[in-house]
Amino acid sequence: MPLPRILVIAGSDSGGGAGIQADIKTITMLGGHAMTAVTAITAQNTLGVQGVHPVPVAMVARQVRSVLDDLGADAVKIGMIGSAATVHAVADVLEPLGLPLVFDPVMIATSGSVLADDETIAAFARLMRLATVVTPNLPELAALGGEAAVRASGAAVLVKGGHGEGPVIDDRLVAADGGETRWTHARIETRHTHGTGCTLASGIAAGLAAGLSLERACDRAIAFVQAALAAAPGLGGGHGPMGHALGTVPFDLTERG
Image (cartoon, rainbow, N blue to C red):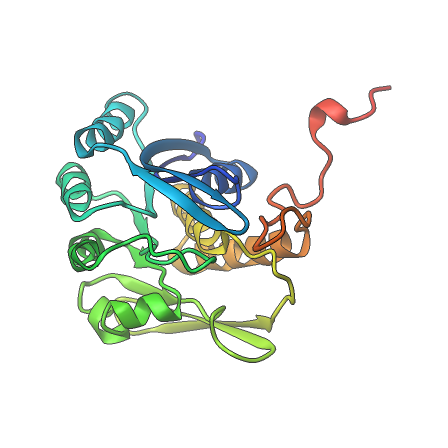
């Protein structure tokens, strides 16, 4: 099979733990080719977001068209989108294509910084109608109007349980036809959880691009997030990045006999 091509439309994280940086690392580790349309440049680290500089709407759309016109794509992942105008510009390009689309409705960073205003959240309805699956955490699901509101868009919804209480995390995939698949696993006690949502959504997109079923793509992506959390390198003084390389040694540092 040709190398799966995944177009990521999201913001840049200068700290390297989330956003475009986490997306590229995840897709590479899961055997895909990551392409990007950057929606915003952020100044952030493990302690929080110090600044956000939106990329002009026309430039975001131009990045998307540039990639699709030459390289094409087998799936799309959308994360931090920046503004309602950007939502509509991206939807205008993607709507006729019918590509598998994973929409991670980023609203609040792990640090608590707000990354989407009310107008942008309202515009998310258009992306949900294009999505194969929407991947909200519990606060994001509430802001979108609840599970029924998301399912009314026609998309499947993966309800992430990481923001819940207790030692066990319960993730639920509710398909468009109402069928449900559930993953239950022990919570990994760590403060290094920055980028979990980005990583999960990109992992699902990589699976869909490779021809996996939605259930299998979610299963593999959830397993990858757990492994990356366990391998977190412990960087920074706040919510640090996960270990996307899973503790492996980079090629250029390996011993060569």
